[in-house]
Image (cartoon, rainbow, N blue to C red; front, side, top):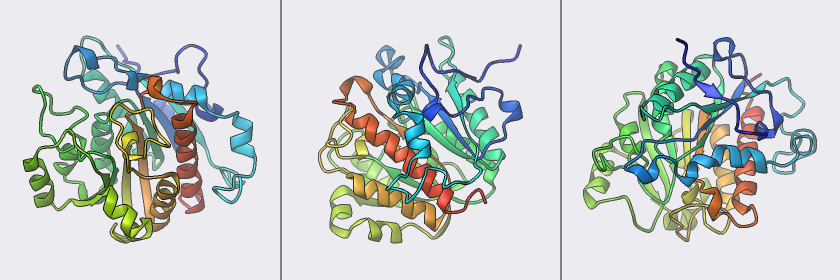
Length: 318
């Protein structure tokens, strides 16, 4: 029996910016794919369907009217989203889950990501908690080049295991460090406390992770941060919403003051795209019920649109 890897957004939820829905990945042929991965690996019963699992469809539903975003002049980009170019973007829906097998959606997410990366397309993944980049990054082995991982977060996510679970939201960067195709790791916005023991910091430093705290980032500026990221790419960008300042992304479980502001994350996205090929990005750990006045959703949509526009203007699809 053929297992359906992805399903359409629930109910009457539109696709992201009303881009075409493509669930037949066997015929995948697009430049950019949007993918929802609602579920991570739970540490206990409470995490089996957490608030973050609602984020992919909540972001789709909260998107601005598609014709405005896709067709009007965007001052963030200096033109329309796709700059008048013939570029194909599809929404692949949400990775399906099996309540009797919590690893099933990881295997399916990896299979989808492998199809997208293997086709030379850019993948934009919406989580879900921060465990979901693990299967996405596994699929990056199809690139056959060493990849620089850029990680925006309040936390280092270097835990080896919690409650016997090694692929949950506390461990994605630790798991990435074990993947032979991941080389340099740059972690930006680290601050506060949580999900980190002192030995994990030592292990991250022993690996060679470049840890840039939020306070160092604010002092040195994003241009200096970009200079510490190796030139040429390829890159993968993983963004935990709590890496942003809660003033612009309040819809997170672990709010911590002092994160990246809008100007800083925009400069990081555009600067990284200009330095070399960004293979994909994910945005995770948005908890929709914690939002206020759609502040988080507005910034999340703007972030993804800036990423798309930056990739287009970097000439990835010419």
